[in-house]
Structures are given as structure tokens and as C-alpha cells.
Image (cartoon, rainbow, N blue to C red; front, side, top):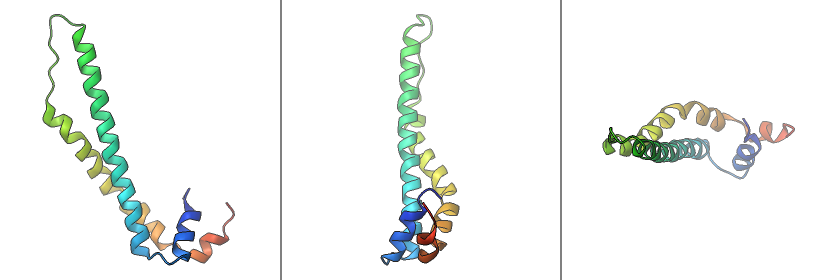
Length: 101
């Protein structure tokens, strides 16, 4: 709902509902993927840095999980993204542009 003006302007300029919905779904998936990358990198750094202080225990990292984190983030956002993207696509341009910002 924060981007109502942008949605209205895009629709008024001729963007189809499908294109607007697709944009929101693609953005949601990309943000989830990038969040997974950041989370995986920070997790590995914490394990490596914290594990270096423990002389008795070596840090154990499963890099398959590290590589799967970005995909998990993308899938979660891909599953949660359709509702807002459909809602954005259904907005009528005239109604949206009339709303005060």
C-alpha cells in the first residue's frame, strides 16, 4: 500500500494488470533471495569467528545448507508474494491517482 501512487501511474500509462502483478512478485522473490544470501553470509561469519575462539571444538559448517538459504528465502517470498501482487494489480488507476499521498 506504500506504493499506491506508483501502481496508479504505471496502470495509467498502460501497464497491464499482469505486468504490475508480475513486477511485485519478481521484487518479492528477489528480496527473499538477497535476504537469504545476507543471512547465510552472516551465519557463516558468526560460526567461523565464534568457532575460532574455542580451541576444543572446530566449527562444523554444512555448505549445502548455506547454499540453500538463498533459495529458501526466494521460495518463502514467492509463496507469500501473490496476495500483495494480486491486490496491487487489481487497483484501478483512476481511483489510485485520486488518493492523497
